[in-house]
Amino acid sequence: MKKITSVPLRLFAPLLSVMLLVTALPALSDEHARKIPIDDAVVTKHKTKILGKTVEYTATTGTQPVWNDKGEPTATLFYTYYKRTDVKKGEERPLIMSFNGGPGSASVWMHVAYTGPRTLNVDDEGYPVQPYGVKTNPYSILDVADIVFVNPVNTGYSRVLENKDGELPSKDAQRDMFFGVNADIKYLAEWLNTFVTRHERWTSPKYLIGESYGTTRVSGLALELQNSQWMYLNGVILVSPTDIGIERTGPVKSANRLPYFAATAWYHNKLPADLQSKYLMDVLPEVEAFTMNELLPALAMGNALPAERKAQVVKQFARYSGLSEKAIEQSNLDVSTTFFWKELLRDEGKTLGRLDSRYLGIDEKEVGARPDYWAELSSWLHSFTPAINHYIRTELNYKTDIKYNMFGPVHPWDRTNNETGKQLRLAMAENPYLNVMIQSGYYDGATNYFDAKYNMWHIDESGKMADRFSFKGYRSGHMMYLRRADLEEANNDLREFIKSTIPAQGQPAMYQR
Image (tube, rainbow, N blue to C red; front, side):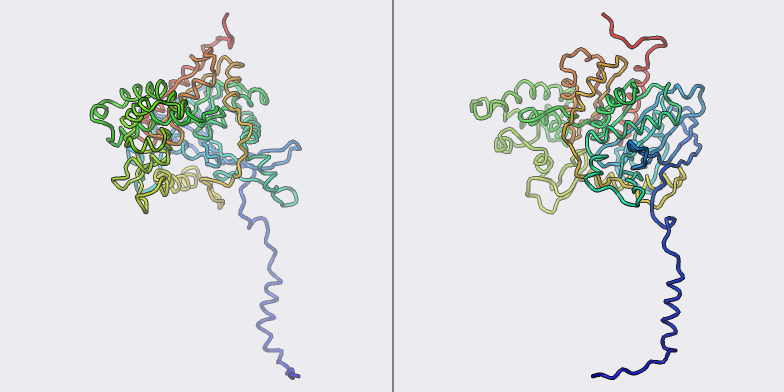
């Protein structure tokens, strides 16, 4: 047995001092926790020039709660609200409620690159430049409408909140409350009601604008706001729309890609000389006609398509797409977008961007059927992330240690029961004031422009409301506004849409016999 020797007490003195110090320290309190305030706002005053004229405005940046049926806060949403102040009867000005997509994307893209008073510091084609940051947006629609940019749960600084016991809801509970097509629409409609009430905007003409998945969101919100919040809109703007629940499968899905292929091939000088020498807008109608009248029926016939007819379709497909006849034939006329992004410039060792095919990437290997990464998204995150973080803190004076989620944790997203296209149609039928404008970039391969046209044709298949739909196309991609010329054109299109959808004083919302 080992003998234990005594140790002098003086040797324990340093350890005892440390133990006493640790015991004396207070427990960590809430003030040390990294969390976003549930309900707060910071207001700053600004002045800018839009279309050459001075515009004064305030920017309110803050959070507003989402409540459950018991009146308990379950989440808080971060928003930025721009209100023009140098006008009379400001409460009667149009209000634009703006959402981006993902799902899981912050409301950053349209905020600091499209409609807001400040726009991203990029070159005229939308590529990153340094120093990072923002500059004056001379085309912003703030001259004709006030704008609120809303960040859904877990995007931007928006967050799910702990309950009274300090616990977050389970993943399943969070999905049921926030992370699905219909849950998203329901809680956002409630939130918008509170926002409109707090800011005294009930008498304003109201508009929703959504980009990408945001188009699914605002299509459903149009009806939810009417039926559950009794809030009626003048317009819905769909920027680079998704399918909004309108089925596009089989031959339709395959055929609808070709006009996008043609636009992209034209941009990269891959079409035959006679087509390449034409203006893009003279090429696309020809390709669209071939797509509807020849390619779609050929795809529908499958292996019943006669060999001679198939050869003719393959040849024309190659002519319009910049791809080889062999590649098209081996694809059975069903060329995937991923293959196209890899194949069109394969011989040059470059790949194409998914959301904007003007952007080029470099893969590890030239072989393969899809790009290694999305060149356009890498470019956008390169410029947007530092800009929005700097802008919110320094110009809007909103300071927090919470991370700004460009893309937040919202998955798995419940995509079941997506009937948002039908909901938009019903909202229009119930509300004769409601009009829809669609904006698409010709080089967008994720939500291609011909799919957007297809949506427009099938939201109201009767055609009885056809005059209340409009389509605008641009020579850029998913975020058409990144190209300087399209930033100007697209904002002007928005401005004209807003002006044209505000009825004359006393004009009733009714159908004529």
